[in-house]
Image (cartoon, rainbow over all chains, first blue to last red; front, top):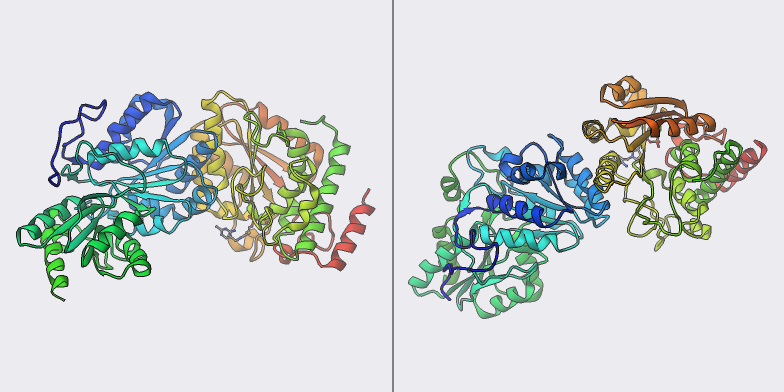
Length: 328
Length: 275
Ligand SMILES: Cc1ncc(C[n+]2csc(CCOP(=O)(O)OP(=O)(O)O)c2C)c(N)n1
Ligand SMILES: [Mg+2]
C-alpha cells in the first residue's frame, strides 16, 4: 500500500484517532481516559504539568485515582513504585527532561532494579517543544532510558499509534518509557496497523536505502523517501517505534536489502535510536550507516519547524544525506 | 503479631544483634553501626507490631516494612530469618557471589524484601505509594519506613514528607534512626538536620520522640502512631550507633566495616554478659 495512506477504521474506539493529525500527548490524554473507564486499577500521577501532559482529562474524570505529587519528580517516581507494589498500574507523567533526567536514579534503583510495573509517559520529548528552549527540550531521554536493564522504550509516531501503545503497555508487565511530543504531528500509520511491543513497521523496504525513524521523524522520513523515489532512488521507511527491545529482525532484513541505513530521530545522535541501530549492525551486518539527529548540542528557542531546520531534521536533510552517502 | 512481652522482645533484640555481628564477620564487609542502632526498633516491628506471615511473604493484608536506609541490610536479613522467611543458614552467604542476600536488599532475590533499596532517600516515597494503594483497596495494613538521620539530608525525603501529609496517609509510620552519625562524621558537623522534631511537625506529621533502645517506649510509640488519624506519624528514635558493643558505640568509623574475628569474640562475650 502507499505510504501514509489513511483508511477508515470501524473498530471500536479507533475511529476518532485514525488518520487524525494531532499531538501524541493529546492521543495519550484521550486514551488514558478511556482506559480509566475500563479498568479501575489504572492510577495516574503527575508533577504539576497535568494540563500539558494531558493527564488532566483523567484527573477530572477520576479524581480519586489521580495524584498530583507537585513539583517533585523523584517523589513521583517513588510513589508510583509504591502504587505498583500495591497492584495498581501507575502511569506517571511529566516533561521528558524532568521525568528521565531529574528522576533518573529513582527510575534505576526503585523502578528498574525491582522490575516494577510502572509506566513512565513523558510529553515534550525532543526540540519541537519550541519556544521554551533547551531547558525544556529533551534530547537525551532515550539514551537515559535505553541504558536501564528491564526498561522498554517506545516512541510512537502519531496519535493512532500512541493510542495503541498506551493500550498495549497497560497489558504488559514491566517498566515502560513512552516518549510523546508537544507539537501536532501528521497521521502516518494505516488503519490496519497493529502495534506490538518490539515490532517495527516497515512502510516499504527500499533497495537503495532504508530510513529507520522514530516519533515525529517517521512522517519526515516518509516525505524524504517520496522525494528520493521521485529522483530514482529506491528508499524505504521503517517506523522503529520500539527503540528497546529493538526489532533486529526487521532491521537486518532491511540492511540486507539495501546499501545504506539512515537513522532519523529528534534526539541526540549519541545514545538514541542511531546508536541502537549502529550497535546492532556493527556486530551483525556491515552496511553504511548515517545518523540524522541532534549533533551533540543543546536545543534553543524557536518555532518547531524552524528548529527542525536549524538542527538538520528536515526531509531535505535526509535526502541530502542519502544522496551523499550513496555516491560513495 | 506476637504478644506484648518486653522481656521477650529485649531477648530477641539481643539475638538479632548477635546474628548481625556473626553474619557481618563472616562476610568480611558491611554496615555494622547502623544495623545495631536500629536493632531494637526493627525487632519490635517484626516480633511484635507488624502483622505478617513469613510463610506467605506476599500476603495481601500484611503490614509493610521498607528499609529506606538499605545499608542496614544485615538487620533486615536477620529479622527475616529469625521470624521464618528463610533458613538462618542463608545468613552465612551475605554478600557472597550468587547469594540472595545482596550487599543491599534486593526484592527480586529475597522473599520478604518489599523493594530494593541502597540508594538513600527513596523509601518514604515508595511507602507513600503503597499506603495510597492500601487505602484504595480499603485494607487497613500499615507501612513502616526506616530512615537514617543522615539520609534525611536527601531532598526527596522532604518531597515525600509533604506527599504523606497532603494525602493524609495515617497508615504511614516513618522511623528516623537518630544515631547522630553518618559516614563523614557527626550529622551535626556534616550538615545539621536539627531541629528535627519541629521540622517534621511543620511538615504536618505527628511526631513521637523516644529513646530508641527503650523497648517499652518503642512499643508505646508504635501503638500510639496507630491511633493517630488524618496524618502520618514519625518516630524519632534517639539511638547510639553500634549499640550493644561498647567498642563500636558512637564510633563513626564502624559505619561501614565488619567486625574482625577477635572483635566478634569480644562483642559476643559482652552481649552475653548483659543478661
Ligand atoms: C543516594 C546515596 N548517597 C550516598 C550513599 C552512600 N551512603 C551509604 S550510608 C551513608 C550514610 C548514611 O547515614 P545515615 O542515614 O545517618 O545512616 P546510619 O547512620 O543509620 O547508618 C551514605 C552517605 C548512598 N547509599 N546513597
Ligand atoms: Mg546516622
